[in-house]
Each structure stands twice: as structure tokens, then as C-alpha cells.
Image (cartoon, rainbow, N blue to C red; front, side, top):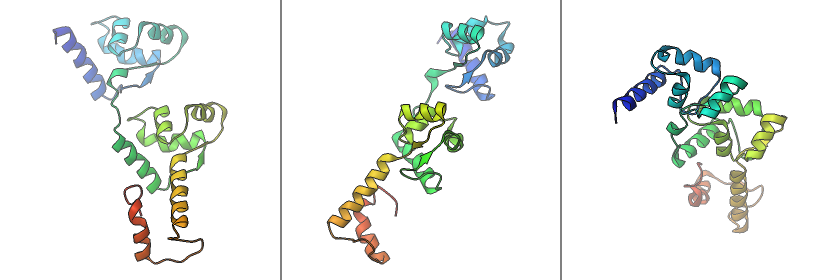
Length: 192
């Protein structure tokens, strides 16, 4: 790594550590100027934009048309499948969502808030099994979207299996011991 590259990395690290920017954050031109100010004497605006991984065309749109641009797109950390499962489990356990529930955009933002530093909205929507079209409709048209549709189908499939195998029937009372017995094959797929 040459001196210039090291210097650029140092600037990015400073900005991230000071929490002025984070990977995949959208910023407007006013905010860009604010974080650019300390580096004004060292580089031009367009060079600083490049440092933040904002393309020249996006920078010009941001500057002249008032749009926002995403910074540090290549530094985004992918969330592992295990971590995604953990997030869904947290939301379900805390009763913030349940399989098949319909939610609006305001509620979506409320449950998304703790994870906004780790992923984008549309990624979170995907995690909740909301299609991109449903997400956009929910966001822009005020519609509702169902979450965890696949989990609901899985639960219905399990109930069907248990009834078909005559392990349970509607309205039947069971004790905890029997519950554990019929739960055993599904232990790795869901909690008690």
C-alpha cells in the first residue's frame, strides 16, 4: 500500500471512528460538505467523494439536484445466515412479529431501528420475507405486508403432519411429556 492509499485509509478510519459516516449510509450534499471541511486543504471535493466511494455522476447529482448518495458501499459487511436467523428469533421471541402478521411501514421502521447499522431497509425487508414489490408498496403507498410467510407455511405443514400421523387431534389435551415426544423431530427447526 503506498503513502496516498495509507492516507486515504486513515481518513476513512477517522470518519468511521468518529461515527460521522458508516458503510452504505446515504448522505446529502450539505452533510458531505460538513464532513469534507477538515480535509478541504488536502483534496478537492470530487476526490473526497471518490474516497467515500461516491461515483462522479452520483456526486454531481447530489451536488446539483439535491439527491443523496451512498458512501463506502464496498465496506458493507455481509450478515451471515446464522446472524440472520438470530435476528428473526429475537424478533419472534420478543413478540414484535409473528409468522403471517401484516405490518405497515411505520411498524417496519420501528422494528428495523436496532438493526439499521447492520443492514439496509430492503435487506431487512428480505429478512422478514417481504418481497421487494411489497416493501416498495408498503413504503410508498401505505399498504401492509405479511412477514415470515414461509414460517407460517412450515407451522401449518407440521400441524398437518401431526394430525395425519394421528399423533394429535383437534381439541386433544396433552401433557408436557407427550409434548416433548412429538416436539422432538422439530427441535432443530423451532423452539418449544
